[in-house]
Length: 184
Image 1 (cartoon, rainbow, N blue to C red):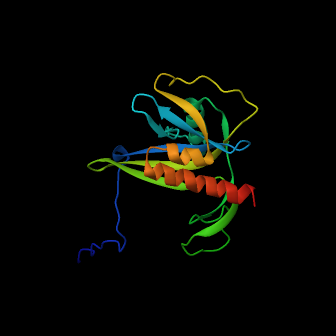
Image 2: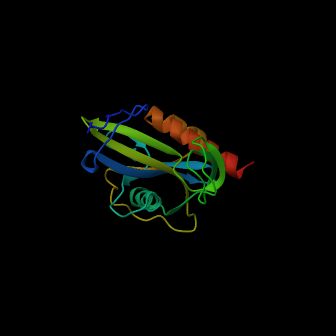
Image 3: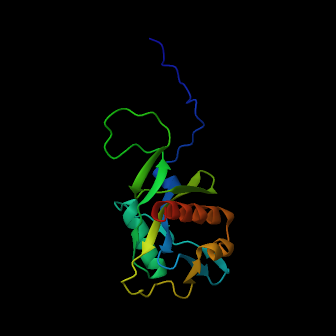
């Protein structure tokens, strides 16, 4: 009997076991009525970033996004359905579809995935959603008041404020998705 041939995938691939990755979820939080975006001003480092946090065992990505935004900004929110392209198949798959981007309307799915390398064989996966402030609910106190402040800026100004290029690009994409979904 011959040993089975050990083949490699034709795709460049990486694999991480559960102790080598952490999964975080965040949201680009918008105040639709005034066309503003909420950012976290990290007071010690004077950086401007977005609300996100680690996903707990058993928690959905959607629930994590809403919870982390509320915990870090004090604002309750709802995930905002947007029109966008994604490679994910439809909720009800009636036939085998090829793997390519398709356009969907009014979906609450991650619009960006960031991958940060934390060290040798360690990564952080960050799933990003678009969210809107629940305007009729008052802001709550956060546990992070001494570390950072939640601040709102106009869509244009927030792109100037964001500290990191990748975050600016992501916020710009979120704004485009919202504008294309709700103003056309």
